[in-house]
Image 1 (cartoon, rainbow, N blue to C red):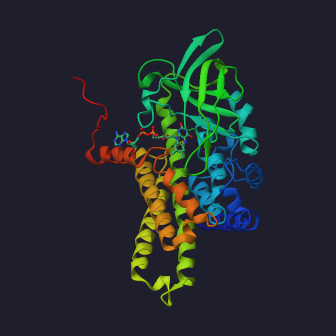
Image 2 (tube, helix red, strand yellow):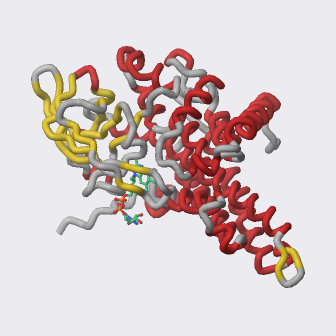
Image 3 (spheres, helix red, strand yellow):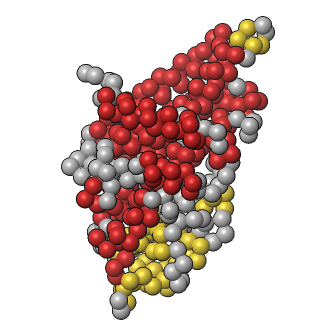
Length: 385
Ligand SMILES: Cc1cc2nc3c(=O)[nH]c(=O)nc-3n(C[C@H](O)[C@H](O)[C@H](O)COP(=O)(O)OP(=O)(O)OC[C@H]3O[C@@H](n4cnc5c(N)ncnc54)[C@H](O)[C@@H]3O)c2cc1C
């Protein structure tokens, strides 16, 4: 078995790394502390063909592999961790579910702007009372003449401070079967985007209030019964999240290795203290094994390019754990220097922490893995008396 990349992908990786070093490295620290979506980077990446890699050619993309998109995320992050979010937004986020299931009309309306890096799409899934238990969502889409009115509230949506359009999970009817999704444009009458709040990782998010928000029928992405497809698309998003976890953990790890070689205490380089060596060794094992699990998940996809739920859960759990562990080790090994905002290491630490919650928390992933281990479903709801 060959664990190396095929020549074509190795060349692609080298070219993205060299683009990132040349064009993105200089502004990396400033970008990390800026909550705004880096549109200049998005436009440049669009020009390089790094957006829409995973979208089929007949749907406006480039029919590239998920592996290529993972490589792009990780190659960009070697120079600018924040810019890896642009590769995510252009390949793995709600854009992927959108491109997969959009009508021709919907695709023509939004995809060119998204792939040009001119606009970004947000995902409105989580609600104040429906987080991990996403199927408890109560945002309703009620049929009216010519379309639907939406009522409800969404929280924590990435890019909500600037998204031009939202892919919103709604309830057309009762139960899991009643869930589907609609595309709602920012500025729609009845949609209020609240004032931005800030996550610990520096990202801004706005509460989305839908108050009798009319949306025409043509904006339905997936009608009743769409939930399963939405979650399959979401598995792709999870892999982008996994790739960034490993990439930012790796970034912090590499910085800390360089620091430990150069910094002397007690007359010796930090690298010579075994207490630190073992921390680095354990983080290295986690990063390497998570990378292999991620690569397995992205190459073992179905005919539509969708990875399996099990492979995704295993890869995301390992990646979230590895990225966070590596960044945490890096902060510790660099002492106050790693804890300072002048270093990108503390940024990687805060970002990797968030991915243990976002996109399916590590506990929810373990629940999913346990179901495969025991080959049965474990209902998380309290038994009915
Ligand atoms: C950085 C970031 C970006 C995000 N981006 C988006 C976005 O773009 N769009 C969007 O809709 N949402 C987004 N979210 C929200 C995210 O999907 C939710 O935070 C997540 O689903 C968890 O929901 P919750 O925060 O309500 O926590 P809760 O569901 O209240 O969970 C709290 C804790 O309890 C644990 N828990 C819950 N149920 C179980 C169980 N059955 N077994 C074991 N443990 C359990 C959880 O793992 C967690 O540790 C984002 C969140 C973060 C942090």
